[in-house]
Image (cartoon, rainbow, N blue to C red; front, side):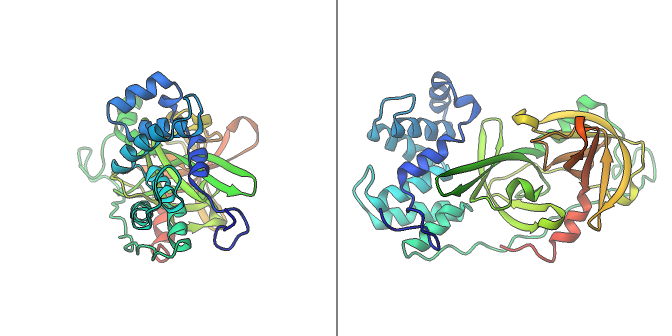
Length: 347
């Protein structure tokens, strides 16, 4: 095709491009064909999508467009946003199916409404009106205040590491981001923390400039979109249509003490939701934003992850390290995200 992305001279993506892009995000349980087939048989939309990509590309499976289409359709009907996008392009371009503009628009619209940026761009390219997303509601978050009594429900008791991890780990997700450029795909990964049913805090250096963003937790892979960015202080907020299990409370920076026990949770080197104990080793300012210095482990892939106190309150978003070995780690105070995002968050 000679057409290009709106505003660029790059070739217009078609189904093969999308399948190739998806193949770069192999879900870990699906890297083995037998495991992927078992997951698909159990109803996993992600597994159906991956099988479809393998059939389409002739990668690990013989090239079979009919089998690819069957798996893509099952995944799309289950809400797999990449499959919806691919089907939309397939119907628009006549790849695998007879061209059908109405059907193509239906699938692209479904993916666009789920917040998938490439589908939003393609709707515009093919002359469809992009769906209007409702403005996100402000998060309903409680901050933890000083305890009035040891048993006060507003100030939970300290937890041992096992209990704390089981309590807070469901709120932490791995982030997969990809950016198209002439000749290829640039990928990066990090972490994010759910703070409402649909919003997550992360770092801008993880998601900034990405053409699309996915969040991953075990077998689940869900679409996400950037709704707020403060690049100078590396504070970004994601929104996803899927229901999340958010953190229970965000503790104020003002109540933190040097020497208190903290725990980092993130996905260093892709090792999903790794727990690391440590202490608050300093309370400082960076770019006018309060940050927490800690010796809790922070490594590449941990960016955008969580720093919790020993009561399970979110206190920071792990952001960067200084020097070798990760001994000097820093987390942006979680409550500063709320102050920064409320005036600027947009739909």
